[in-house]
Length: 235
Image 1 (cartoon, rainbow, N blue to C red):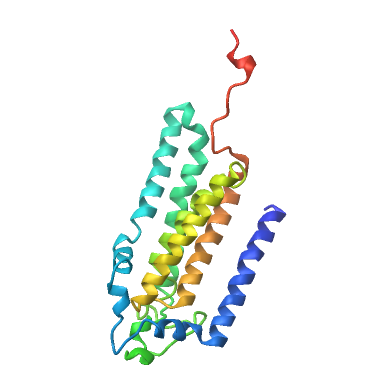
Image 2 (cartoon, rainbow, N blue to C red):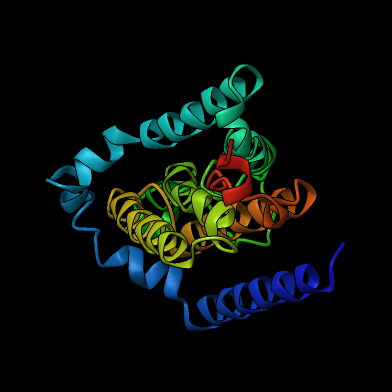
């Protein structure tokens, strides 16, 4: 793999690990969740727009991945769509392997971290665990946040455009991060996840996207069809 890949991977993993340590040392997971907790309830999470964000769930991600898959299939039939082949495959694979496999199946179903509303500090019965502490599989689905991962997935086109159209890439990255942050606030306010759960939802999606983009060599594929040269237009 390219040297730039390892450099970017370190630039992502480093801040993630530092932020996780700071959250643990400062007690930010419990402190942030306590801001939304009131006498056995999580009142803000049931109000607009946070309740709507929960219902939106992963539908935007599914729509984007479906569009990518259709574009990839169309590239097999129509040459004008050929420039979208790898990008479309990337969009579909990222949703399946990132928010799907890694976040929801490997960690969310298997890590066993109790949700805020399930722990003793918020009138539950389970013990609070740090994100690196593995609990009992199937008895805690807090780490990481599936909703936040699906929202952060919307940064996916950034990896398609970042070497070809920087303005469009920045727009997707900014929009996806903002959407992910709002979804994270919604899930924290509902007692469904801790701050660190949403942080790692972003980290896992970004790292999966980086690996896939490198393997598919998206930096070598134009996201736009090339214009014909004057010689090609001449008769």
